[in-house]
Amino acid sequence: MADNFDVLIVGAGAAGMMCALTAAQRGRRVLLLEHYGKLAEKIRISGGGRCNFTNINAGPENYLSSNPHFCRSALARYTPQHFIGLLERHGIGYHEKKLGQLFCDAGSEAIIAVLKGECDDAGVRWCQPCEVQEIGRSDAFYITTSRGSFRAESLVVASGGLSIPKIGATPFGYKIAQQFGIPVTRLKPGLVPLSFHPEAWQPYAELAGISLDAVVSYGKQSFRENLLFTHRGLSGPAILQISSYWEHGGPLSINLMPEQDAARLFAGERGSRVLLDNFLAQHWPRRFAEVWCAQFTENKPLNQYNDKQLAQLAGRISDWQITPTGTLGYARAEVTCGGVDTHALSSRTMECNSVPGLYFIGEVVDVTGQLGGYNFQWAWASAHAAGEAA
Ligand SMILES: Cc1cc2nc3c(=O)[nH]c(=O)nc-3n(C[C@H](O)[C@H](O)[C@H](O)COP(=O)(O)OP(=O)(O)OC[C@H]3O[C@@H](n4cnc5c(N)ncnc54)[C@H](O)[C@@H]3O)c2cc1C
Figure (cartoon, rainbow, N blue to C red):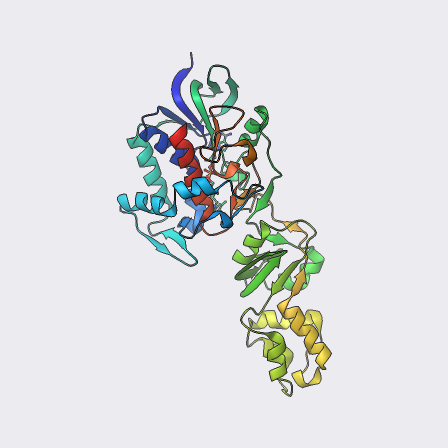
């Protein structure tokens, strides 16, 4: 005999816990099933251990999706202020770092404790660690697991994306979508460092650890943030941001002096006897100036370059074209771009149009936030929408 619940939720991460507490507070009998031994590992490691739990400016424009308006309804009904209110009720302090990004003063564990505490107070039941072996549907959903069988009229899939498999990520959600005939859009790692061919990157590999302010563009998308050199390529917030938009084979354009017009700078130094790398080192980390110059030109006093050469150099500074060969993959990605096709879901409730009672929430859905707290805000908002309905 299967144990009876109203709502079964697979995945006790950010979205799963928020959905569980919301549904249980409505009086629903909720069971949360989690296969991993530890709770909400992604929250724990997020934001360098301080969890960038939301962004006060979160809006639809901060998300990638093949259906850009889909996230609007859920985001409007559960806003950053709602989550801030939850933390404040528990006396949890937070601070804004930059660009509306809110971090937890006491660290990520405090956020996990709030969610777990709210779930427990509302009477959510837990099944962890627990392997889901089979899901069937007749008059209701039936789940067979390593810890028994369960039945409920609603099944919420909150199993997240593919990034960082070593802390529990699995393709579970995409497989369940497939089982029920729900389409999944193309998946790829997002918010991920980019790599280059080892030979092509060899001159820059020694710059590992150096960062500078830059504007990184791909197509119409641009981000001004730090750019970080690594042994294998580029990382840092500007690169993580653009990586979600980048497609294989496409060149990035990098403005290495966003505050300055390089052509005008050179024009002002036309008669100068200062060596090019020394001049650039006034604007960049010295080692970067040396290595970058060595790639493109002989290092000479500025007054020994002709106008054409200086114009070319200025062009390379404001539009350094560079083509990554790949990404560091799901092992290093913060998110999975793509997911359960939102055209198959209700934007109010996250319920599948063709399978009543089946819900997908959080990262498993084809809604991917930019870097800066947007992914958790989507997890909270989509989970809340489903928790009110399931
Ligand atoms: C290093 C890193 C740092 C990040 N920092 C931030 C940040 O600061 N701010 C931000 O907004 N976002 C951040 N993110 C992204 C954010 O963590 C995710 O978008 C968010 O956790 C998604 O929530 P979710 O509940 O959908 O999925 P998850 O939090 O991944 O939860 C999914 C849960 O489902 C479980 N699960 C998977 N498969 C199964 C299965 N077969 N059976 C049962 N359970 C299963 C998993 O173990 C997990 O507990 C970061 C991600 C990473 C990797």
